[in-house]
Length: 183
Image 1 (cartoon, one colour):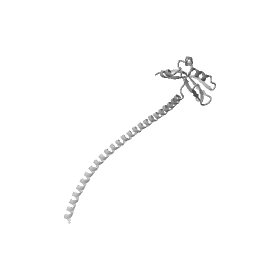
Image 2: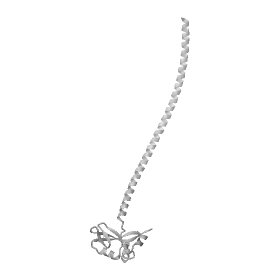
Image 3: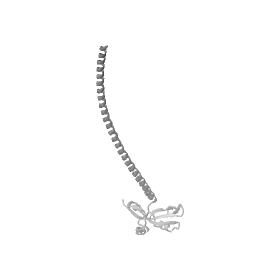
Image 4: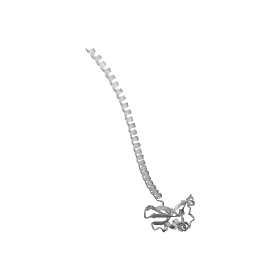
């Protein structure tokens, strides 16, 4: 449902628990829709010098407006004619909620920015880690290549050594056979 402006009054008393026209007023302003006030109660509130009265307006939907018992009373019609020049009252609770929501939104924005920054840091760290991993894999491949070359050199060395040992063994036998003949 859409909300419409309805004439209202802000009423504050000079002391707490001040009673007038069936309402209790205090030093904190109380907002009353004019349609909720009987014309005599409205006149009594306006006439009392212990009360400070400020004309204002409130937002009400159609059902709330229809529920007001004096919505068509003369004091309401007179105030409704001047409604465009009146400031719309924002309930104190609504103002507090709006401020709290603004604070929450600011905090959520800060958290979102912090999370975005952390995400960027994590992505940077992952990129650096992937680069290091690639460097380690390249070093491992180089090491495997060197190991294979070493194994080939060792195998060639072992073959040469075996050939040398075999030749030496054959040479030693012929020397020992030759040496035993001379004796």
